Image: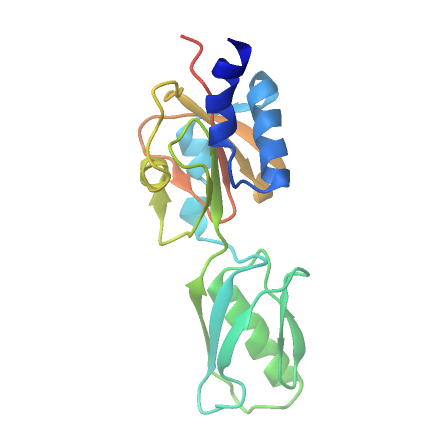
Length: 201
């Protein structure tokens, strides 16, 4: 009987990297220890604009400078390496702020006279959904996503899912938050790890 009851739980963890599985187990066992926030508070950072971080891919356009224009991936140190100006810090910045940093470096170094720079996001780092969903795992982030859109990507809630709250681990928070699901819709950010716990009912 014990083995029969345990197998479905193992199925939900199939294919999940070890560090995410550890996160899921921690969230599931210690959900009550996370600070409780409402949707508006959780969405506050998202409404200020998405921030770049390691793993994001961007296209930098320096107008009339084809040797500086190109596609770059933000490295684990949070920077991109460009010709002439070497490392440009990107993590924690908006695309416009990154463009400003590149403009300043090009100007200060005297490399380009009156540079005009644009930064466009090609793809954000993925997000993760764990716990009581049909297909837990890693998913591509596309545009501004709501929680329900993210859950739909993961195959929807299981019959055991707690649909009233979710645990969200977000880098800018420095840890996890237990979010009460409601109106307005919870906005998911790139790099988020969402854990849907089992309902206690």
